[in-house]
Length: 339
Image 1 (spheres, one colour):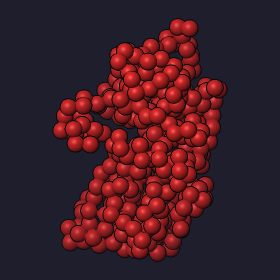
Image 2 (cartoon, rainbow, N blue to C red):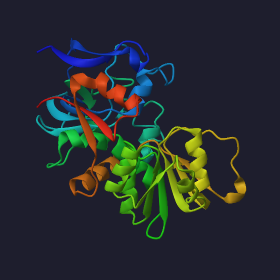
Image 3 (cartoon, rainbow, N blue to C red):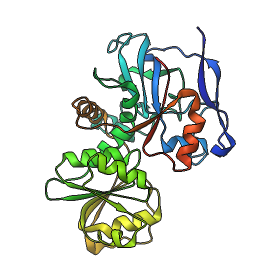
């Protein structure tokens, strides 16, 4: 078989114009150092939506057409020359980090996610909204037995992103952590933060998201549209993680943060002033490193963290993206192929 079906994007455009098309295209093959995986599932990330609608940099996506999708699970069906760390049939997963240079100061210090020459799955190379995908063997991960490959897909973006964010905090029993934006990534951050022993507060405006937050370990859910509820957090939390790209949310997060507290942002921040006298700390985050991803898989395999997903057949990417854009998803949408 030389062809496959995939969701392809020819040109960036509003999602309402249906720019992503499920169609027959050439099936890729594994080159040196690569694996070909039969895709089982791929999570639907808001950054996919941003790329599709042209919100990213002018050079992203960097090829056309492109197959989006960067949190992918599947099974190895072909090994490229020199690949010895996988066998055909192995269950594998791929993160947004498709490949890095391997030699820069970031790659050699366990910070490969900051490599200036990194390749991003589904943005600079074809991703997982398809029946098959090529991955770099050294940047793919064997999925532990017992994990459902569809539910495991979000571990490879929300999971590694949330883990990297919580990893930047120094919190434990007696501390309070507030997660602003308890959606697809936030519901994972709540679980990782709870594992530290800290009290976890979820702050958001979507009732479905707040309900899920309580189900996965938040001790309290605060509706950000209720001024009285929000006011109860003023100067009351030791650490904040923000997953909502909103200046209003950023302001709310700083109102909640104690003097001397730490804010970790996984989204852009915009504010006019930052008062030095409060001694607060801001840390940006993107992903955890390779060891962090391995730890996420260990925790998931041990049943200590899990994903909440809504499943859609792979040919319904347009529908899942539309619901994401409309704010109608309770958690993480995952596209899947029948095995």
